[in-house]
Length: 195
Image 1 (cartoon, rainbow, N blue to C red):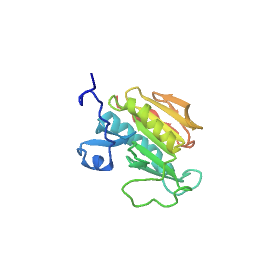
Image 2 (image 1 turned 90 degrees about the vertical axis):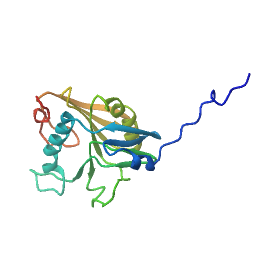
Image 3 (image 1 turned 120 degrees about the vertical axis):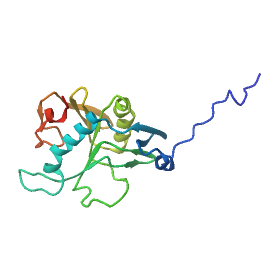
Image 4 (image 1 turned 90 degrees about the horizontal axis):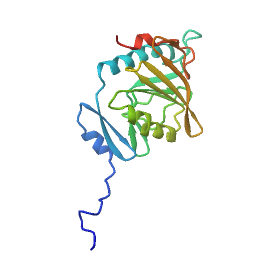
């Protein structure tokens, strides 16, 4: 007895940028390994941790150097859209070294891969952020990745070593940290969490 049409698995259509554009506005739309992924907008814990992290990094690193007290040298952006081949990723925060990207282009998305990304984990996105998205960032050659977890109150710092992520450091609670690639940051992690 032969297979019927119902028995034969239909090839899944690869998602396109048109699918991202058509996604509901209240969702974060990404394409990971050809699949459209719709995530909820960030919760208050997530948004607060990300905003506080930006507040700690932005004055020191975004822009040109201002001497030892302000090392500068980066473009740091909130939720930029990054295209890696047919993948479309939206990290919570990303940074490009100004030596690689001297001018910030006026574009709706970036094809130049960032040097650093930060994903703020939530119950809805943690698995995707820790697995498939990190794999795409590794393929793209992103060197530094941070996984910020406002529920666990932790920051995991990853560095790309050849084609694999290695844990460079872990920070928790109210620790003050200077994680790479921002050695002068002295981030007070206690300011990132909501009691």
